[in-house]
Image (tube, rainbow over all chains, first blue to last red):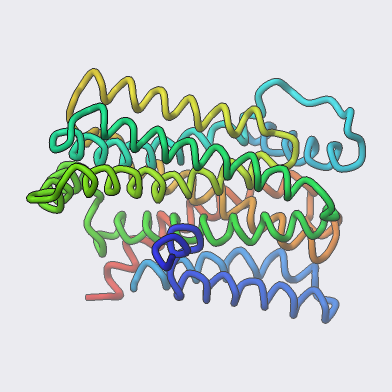
Length: 55
Length: 260
């Protein structure tokens, strides 16, 4: 079952990166900074991918 | 391609508001990433099936592969139908966007790690040898299970991308592209009768990873903040693809230096 889930969503680090990105999106949108989010979220996501690549 | 990306986004909205909206026969922004991603996964699955066939014979190995493909086809039909019913568009967009982010971030990270030399490039010949060692001394049933499980696990990512990109009315393009990739890999495998080691797996992973992360970013934020959030609307999608692909290529050598 664990192999099945990891094949679908990746390992815990991958899920953490995506969760962090979503939390940042939620925080920015619901504090009225949606316009800022479009410039913050892509670099944040790329930084998350770079962090994963180093692991 | 940029115009195709924008057109796909527009088709997606039209489909939500009007079921009879015009749709092109092939949505290339769905078909291309699906075909490329599926090719990578089917090549890996073929390596396993080939190794197993040398132990239990072609009939058993192909039987296991076909059974796994039937399971994947049933999953695609079931989940596609379930997701199309009952969910309002923003929730559907958010769910699919999260799935695409989970998939795309992983592929982009792997491609960056391999590009930077931090991770060894995927080697189909080595995978073939590993599977052969795993099979040594095993019986027919063990070989069948290895082939079934191998095709099913490699195919899960294909299932994910077919469902995620096909859900907005582009089923024919996503499922057709995955099937086309399967036929191409199977034909090449039958001709060559060896692991397909010359497929440029990392370049494909980079391109597909960048495209999928772009869709994931675009849809999750649009689902949360509304359709007006992206400057330039759907034209932001090509910009995101360039940002992720270019950023990944620039960061890869820096990653290698930062580890030294």
